[in-house]
Length: 322
Length: 198
Image (tube, rainbow over all chains, first blue to last red; front, side, top):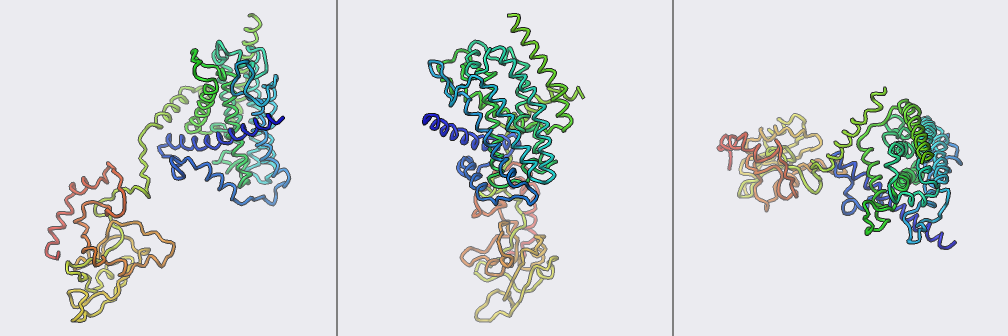
């Protein structure tokens, strides 16, 4: 029990620090790509910027609109935050020599837990937007709900292909099954679908219609300020970290070393893969404009879903024939 | 519709461009610590000059004030006392005030001045929290008696005075040396004004 608590505390710290510096890194990268230096005023190379941002968010006034539903309005940020962090209960970061994973809990239905938790995550957005009691957050919430439903389907289908190849739903088992060949090769289609849906799942550009600051002010978090806004903000980045972790666990071999480079410890490989994914999402954000809403839905239902289904059927046939 | 959805090549091209720009030199000049070089005859904060013997050049004639299109200058002239002369002429400026918030930095005062007393320096950092602080009187306009006589604009080697801080190396049309020698404006003006220089 105590060990689990200590592990959770350490993990929470690690994830929060990663969030803080992912945010700084994103602002830096976006800056460089747009020929700006990025944040560089607080500390050397702006390294203390996250601390300054945190202080600012804590000191901001906490506003609740008159028309808001007070209980749900206050609850929503915590739902987002809670579900974002809850995933890390099962995410393994490496493995001991005997094959036991470095994780808080080794759940044998890891992927199912993951899908369940990430489905709850949308409640933070939809309840927050609805409870704000004003139009733009409501529009953001409606979009968020519709977007999550349409993209989670394809995402789950891309998981199933991996599940069939690995023959297990345990994340550790899936990583161990990739010792010879990483699943992004046999599941190339599934991998691409996952990458696309993961962007939609975390509501980031080009699928950030939930926030859509050019159309919806701030989308679902328009009315939020201070730490409540900060909670949504943290949740977004932690979710980004989560989908990066999942991508490297399911498709890029987790902590397996490529080309037999086993002298570098597995945890480093894992961090490297997750970091590459995070960079990719920031890169996307600096590159692509936002989808039009109807295009987003068309893309989700008429393109991604059929392809994901085809991929699933093909994988099933392949597994059955071998 | 399909054409747009499957235009993966365009997306990859875009990603390539943004990636390339990560390594392109940024044109940012980090202003408070590094200043951009201005043109040599940049119009900034005014300065009242002196003669080499320490006497003020201003003779209180109020020509600058009447030339000023923004009515920013107020001069109150006074007779020079014979035993304690402020300027070599008959009169001097007892009070000389420029409202830098009204000033449009056109430089007409500089052109109107018969003694080259009022000149525009390249100093541009005048920000303050109070409006009143923008009314510059002689205590701030006049070159301090221990700081030389002040430089006429056409004799300044470059745009930013050395005491203002680090200056960025900018290769552009604003590059001072090139702009300065290309126009020869400074030299021409110097010869034109020779009769007045003291």
